[in-house]
Length: 131
Image (cartoon, rainbow, N blue to C red; front, side, top):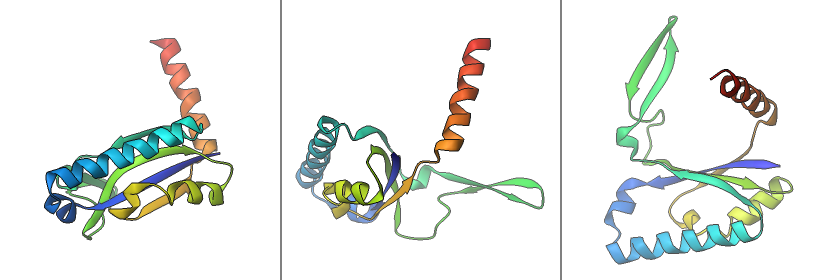
């Protein structure tokens, strides 16, 4: 089963880390990602740029409204996404609880919506076929 792991980070805390410590933290994260790969659990991931460069879309009165920044008003913002293969939620929790990124902020773990993802895959296949 696929899980989407949302890694949150306090950007101001990250910005105050000495360069060497930030590099060491990244190396720890990469090493654990490699461990997840070796176990067949790492499906993919993406780091996210600063929330200062984000926009949030929402519909209001039938119109799409664009707001600068993230939706939540909090110090912790979404810092990255990791796609994980795990037997169940408890297995995903066990795997991610060892991830060094947890030291920088919380991780939210959600099961992937396989029904919608299948629809997206089917749509991608149709678009690719017609291209």
